[in-house]
Image (tube, rainbow, N blue to C red; front, side, top):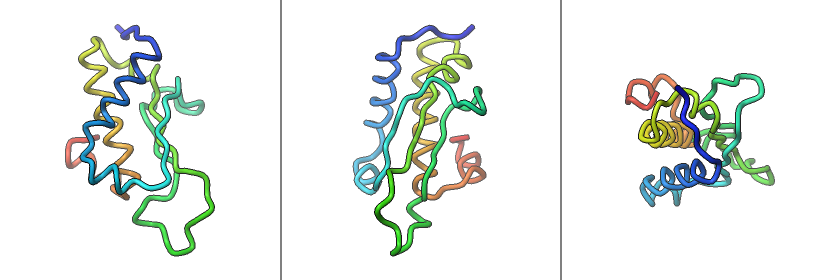
Length: 116
C-alpha cells in the first residue's frame, strides 16, 4: 500500500538526503538544481531523473546554460513504499543515484554498486 505523505515532509526527506552527501562532493556539484516533482509526465513510475551535461562531459565550451536538473518524483516514490522508513531509504537512494549521474556515473556502474 502506498504511503501518504505531505509535500513538505517529502521535501524535508530530500533535503535530509542531500545533507548526507559528503561536503566535498556537494562542493564539486556545479550548475545543478534539485527539484521535487509529483511525477514524470512520460514515465509515471520513474523515481528520479537527471537532465543535463554531466561534469565528466563538460568541455571548455560549457557555459551560459540553464542549470542541470535532478528531479525526485514524490508520488512515484510514495507508490512503491509501504512505510515512512521505506520512503526515507528510497529518497536517499534516488538522490544519490541522480547525483551520481551528474558526476558522470552510468546506470550499469550504479547497479553494480547497489545504487540501482
